[in-house]
Amino acid sequence: MPTTNHPAASTESAAIHISGVHLTRHVARLLEVRDRLALYATERASHNLDDAHDAFMAMVAVEDEIAVQAPKVHAGLFAAWATGCDAAGHEPGAFNARCGICRGANASIEPSRLTVVAKIHQAA
Image (tube, rainbow, N blue to C red; front, side, top):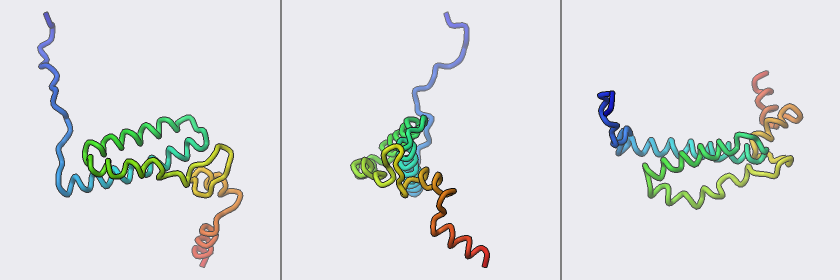
């Protein structure tokens, strides 16, 4: 015999249903987050960093949410996502100017032209 009088756990989802403009904005933000996580995960994997798997799994979780909220959008973009961040990927130890980690590590050695131009404009 149970000693508590708590109600049974509800099987209903705690998620809030959104539609219309709110859903469109939500999906757009999810797509932005997914793209950023994809680039982040690619860069982390290219440098053999310990959290590369965590970054990848975060991206997968966002993709799963997109599949729930907008199945047609997910289906339409899924194939393109597989090759979307190839430009930033590289073999560990190699330099790739499209990789943010490589650019950051190289910034102290060789500033980019954009940085030099920005400093010239700030001084003027």
